Structure formats: C-alpha cells, structure tokens
Amino acid sequence: ANRHQLFPKIGHSTMSNQQPAITPSSRPLLVFNPDAKVSYKVMHILDSFKTCRLESSDLSTSATTFTESQIQNCYVDLNFRDQTTAADRKHAFIIGSVQEPCSDYLSLWASGSSGHGRIYQDLKKAGLPESLYGQDAPHFSSITDKKRFQDWVNHPMVEGLLANRMWNSYGENLDGVDCLVFAEDLHSSLLKCIMEYNMQGGYVNWDASEMVDLLAVVGQEQQLRESHAAVDTPFEETRVAHHGQCEEYYNDELATKLVNGPEKVIYESFGYPSCCSKDHYESAHITQHGQSPDGWEMQEEVDTTDINSFSNKWTPVDIQGNDSDKDTGRMFIFSLTGVTTILLALLVRRVLRKRREAFRQARQAQQEVEQQAVAV
Image (tube, rainbow, N blue to C red; front, top):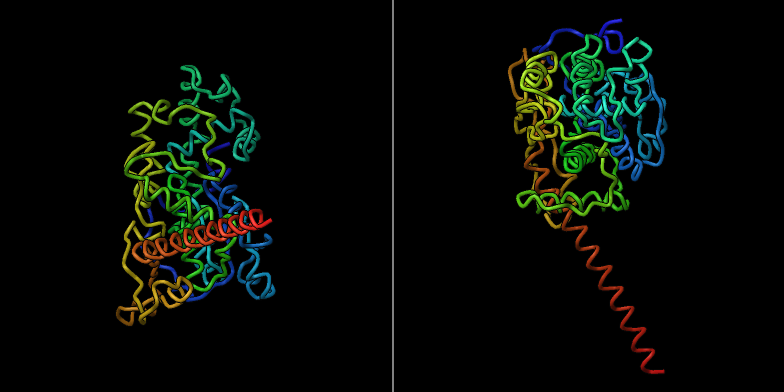
C-alpha cells in the first residue's frame, strides 16, 4: 500500500496556471463538498434553510433533472471522495471546506485513536499499524502518544494525504469550488459562503432559527475578537477536546517538513503562515494563488436599511480583458470581503431589531396582564 491509494495524487505539487471557464451568474443549486472535519456543523446550518439533501453523481445532469422545488429547497451532499470541477460550477454553487494541515492531521489521528473516522478505517484496511495511534485516552497527550503521532504523520501511507485529498476534492487547480469554509473561522466564513450563494441567485431562509443564531454569533465574534473574550454560542463546538494543543505534538523539524512538503500548496493557497496557525487569508473565497481581486460593483443606489433590496442589487462586474482572455475563459472568483462586511452589519442589525421587537411585544403583553390583574 502507498499514500496514493486513498486519494490518488492529481497533477503537480503547486497550482497550475490553467484557468477554468467563467461560471454563470446565477446557480440556485447548492452543493456541499466537504474536505475538512467541519462537515457536521456546516450541514447542520444548511439543513436549517434547506429541507432535504440530494445525491448526485453528475451535477450537469442533476441540474436539469431536479425539480425547481428540489433546487430551491434542497442541497446536494457529496461524499468526501467525490470531486467537483470547474465544469460542475457551471451547474451549481459549490461550498467546500479547509483546515490548517498540522491541526487537520492531529484531528484525524486523534479520531483514529478513538477508533473513529473513515480515513482511519481506510488506512487500517490498507495495513497501517494500529500501534501508531494513541493509547492514552481520552486526550492522547502523553509523551509516548505524541511520539506515536509523529511516527504516524511521517508514515509513507499518511505523508501527503491532505494535499492529495484536497486535489481529489476540488481538482488540481482547486477550481472545483466557489467558496470555502475555514475550520479556524467557521462561523464567519460559513456565513460569507451562504451570503455569496444567496447573492448570486440561491435561496436562503434568513429567518430560520439556526441562521438567526449564526448571525448573532458572528456579530459577537467580530465584537469580541480583539478582546479575545469567550463567545456565547448556541452551536456545538466543532473541535471536541480529544487531543492536546496542536503545538505540543510537533517539533521544529516535523513542522518545517509539513509546511514545506506536499501540503505546501494548502499553506500557500489559503494563507496559513505556519504549522498549527489559526490565521489565514481574510477572504473565504478561492482565488488564484491567494489573490483577492475586487470583482463586484454597485449597479444602482439601494436602501441600505433593506437587506433584501441591498443584496439583490449587487451583480458581477462585466468581464474585462482582451479577446484572447475571453476566448480562453479566464477565471473570475469574486472577493466579497467589502460587500460581506456591509451585509453582515445589516444582517446583524436585522437580527437585533427583531429580537428587540420580540422583547418589546413580550413586555407589552406582560404589562397588559398586570393591568388586567390590577383591574380585577
């Protein structure tokens, strides 16, 4: 067995310069193609405004065979082995996920140490020794377990697995995804992806309880980011404490090897500065070699107090470039950082306004009850 049996390596170790075709301006079909361990949390949110999940092996066919109701109210949930391509993005809006490789490897190993995870099962079938997994539950943070982890991540069957999985999920040029959810910044990056899907023509029920909670949590996170205060989140934490701190498992040699090895493409493409880092590019959207061109412009004046009016009047700018660029179909993946900031402020304000109104109505009802009691 070798490291390519689980996820056959595609192409080169760095992103190529090949550009995919331009995607249609409106793709109401939503696809979730997970690559990092945040799938449960993401699907929990998607399930709040999409009432069903669909299966599809051919998005080009599914886009025409699904009913209008299915496209609006459901989303396609892909297997972690499925690949989406630039061609698929002509038929659906694709959300993916990514995590810093050192943290991702540790999470996979810790899950395997507990006997869980599809990758653990696949590596076991391929012959990876069980002795490389942690033995000292529940946190697998003993000195001997940390040594087992280092031997595990250095094993030829594991080395390069995450880079190969990323290529297998989104293609050699990573052009098979529209927007990425970052495990390190899950709430706000997920909200950005949902906003982008909504803005280009997808249906989102912003009044769904989970969406209201998501907006509130992101608002808290933005306000408390500088103070590093705890966020009161109604959501289940995505990183269960089943291992110690990431930095404790890596020595300098192993960290350098990982950052400069096959996973280098992930570090460079998404702006992770170092092993175990939680920092990354602000944009939650794939761009060629990490660039974030401003690809959106306001087409007309809008009422900024009306979120529905505001979001519906943002459109992609016209394609610029020479005829050869248009013929070959250059990739334009739009950075919505500025737009998203404004939209986020409006959405959070909308949530707070609704909650204040609910509180006002409840207080008014209580006062009426008290007045009736006094009258009696």
